[in-house]
Length: 417
Image 1 (cartoon, rainbow, N blue to C red):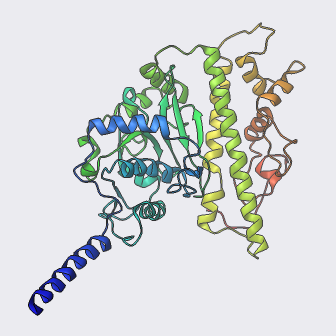
Image 2 (tube, one colour; image 1 turned 30 degrees about the vertical axis):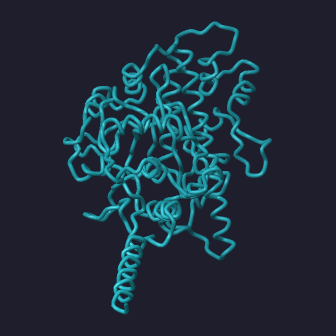
Image 3 (cartoon, one colour; image 1 turned 60 degrees about the vertical axis):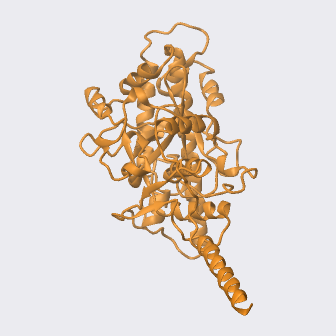
């Protein structure tokens, strides 16, 4: 009898040990026999088009994702990770700047947590170890005619966008987040990313698609769906934005986009890009105020990188120039009604009839004054400041210099990076 009891105790201890072992070494999520293929890629595209909304991380109805911080690259990685988690698919990406090291769903750093909390902890781990440069390693360039929801645009070291859909006229719906990483809504636009693929040799930028986990270390040329045509097309049009995006639209559209509609789309996009700058500048000024309250006068390199806006300001100025080109492409306008082209010309034309500035104010007033929503500048004023190089991209600069409201150039004492 004692021998039987001894065996029972040993068996119980063995089973308990196995159960503890399973719990102790739990994956972030199990994949079973699931793996990425063409069918799952289509399901992913449909899921992104339906579910990837600006408030995805700000909905209390989704507690496992609620208020997860993110910047532009983080949000795109999380888009892929969430779908993989919810559908028990493998997830494998590179660490930023760490050769041969990976972030995967099989990591066992959070064994004691329930699965939904493991994913949340995994997400916070992920966002500190990825960026636009790692996105280039985890994705590959595709043919422009194959752009779908779930694809992405990457400009390494600068910015990235998720593609969330295609309009009838072949324009991409894009979603992006911003630096620094924080809980916030993402920004959605019906516009093409304002970049041109230019790295024809390394193929690190441009319109791209995630690699499947099992293909993560295969070169771009060996990925299913690879194409380098976008770099060739970009070179043929001299890296000019509107001719390049016109080609994309023709490849993707289900109907033509009239000039009036196109001009208005670009005007709305310009307004959105300009309003993004309002947020960037206000965030930087608020952070600088907190620093100085703590006794620090200058930002360090990382802080400066977060809050300075040189590349964004260059892109914004180029966007203004593209809008100017399209504004004057329709020839002589005689209509009494203010249409999109007349509204666009209001930004640039030296002489304006009465009332047009009010129309421009109504269309896109930029509430640049913190705490005062009634005061604003319009796109014409912003363009004049950009065109005369009065705008400062330095996050240490005073408010008036950040917006070009003074002719006196900002000369700072803090180090720039």
